[in-house]
Image (tube, rainbow, N blue to C red; front, top):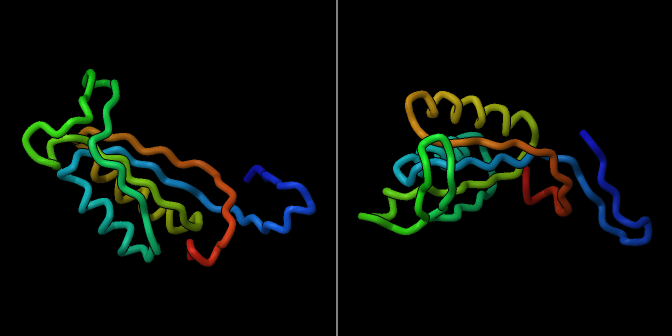
Length: 115
């Protein structure tokens, strides 16, 4: 992993982790968050009503019929082995469905919040 460093006098200790960001339909939100909980993550962030443009055209972020008809962005930071396990489950979920997944390296303070 690449290393990001703060000024030496900052006193902040950073630890390397991975961040997974996944965009899925609201129908799949519970499936993804359950995968995360089953892997022991201590928290995640959900941003509802995500809009954008992709293979299937433009997607509006507004609610059409209910909160499951739009896309959501779910983010989680965890150790590499946890993210790998979650990513494998999400990849299987994507078979025949819309969605994207991004994994990136991050540096975190307060590492105990993520393990």
